[in-house]
Image (cartoon, rainbow, N blue to C red; front, top):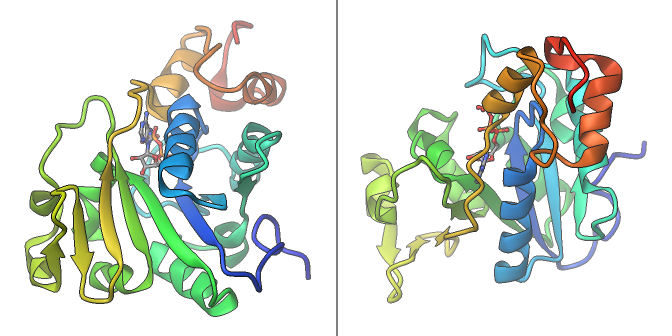
Amino acid sequence: MKRAGECKGGDQTLRVGLFGGSFNPIHMGHLRAAEEVREAQGLDRILFIPAALPPHKRGHQLATPQQRLEMVRLAVAGNPFFRASDIELRRGGRSYSIDTLRELRQRFPRWQLYFILGTDAFSEIHTWKEFESLFELAHFVVVSRPGTPVVPLPRLLPVVTRRAFWYAANGLELIHRSGHRVIFQPVTGFDVSATAIRRKLQHGHSIRYLVPASVGRYIDRHQIYRRRSGAS
Ligand code: ATP
């Protein structure tokens, strides 16, 4: 069966970025951060992976998984390095990164995986399922995010896992005993969040230039996020 996003090049040695999120909706902050990580880390590809049921986002006003995937597809169209992946939607239920990493490692053992996330998400990693095992499976690239304080990387690491790491000489990296790295990467600050976008839509305000035009049109057409007046 054909799977969206991942398949091509599955047997090659590739450096593959994984950018997970609820993408409710995907916005320019996500896309620019991914572009800068791709360039800086020399990645061959980045998979954008919408969560089916994001474990940390219960109660948020959520578009359907298919709508969020479709918006990701529209957003990445035209960038040859970016792909939308439906791996978590296919699995269904709550989406845990550990399950996604294990599945990708098993299916594509030759890929080097780089898990991309913002400092806000990384500072909560101790709440993720089997978080200590995550570092056995992938490198982590932690990107700066406006509104989130810049804390030295070692202090962002959960205390219980610190003994599994040592510092790289440049101070911007930690090296896990598995050989995987945790890299801090400052990126151009886009002070935008999906929450702020949903709020604007609820109030009938424009979201132009905060999301790709194709995503704005999709939201408009499908009347997602209880948009009340035409302003995208
Ligand atoms: P919400 O406002 O609904 O919580 P969000 O804007 O934080 O959503 P998510 O889909 O939850 O978006 O984020 C997925 C990943 O993208 C997370 O790792 C998050 O830290 C990162 N991220 C989101 N927005 C930005 C941004 N503006 N700059 C850098 N990273 C971001």
